[in-house]
View (cartoon, rainbow, N blue to C red):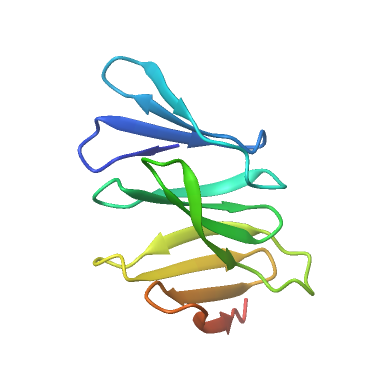
Length: 126
């Protein structure tokens, strides 16, 4: 569950693979987005201007959505396909140009959102 920047809206997602937009002040469902994930959603980020949001799942997929049109506009592979590793969490830098996704196998992917591929990846020594 995530609030938008001013607390007007909430987005929820989970094991049912659905993303829902709620009006936080009225407690009403505004929109249910189409199912695009093939596994449970593990994390969700709302972009500051609310025009996009990002979801990640248990199979390592990371999707960027157009909030208004309700469609996926970009697909990332948040964990390598050779590893059966899911994304556990994501974070954006302060100007929302870099996305990081952390996987269950200890690898963190750093995505330049202006580029098509991962900028780099790092394996944890934990």
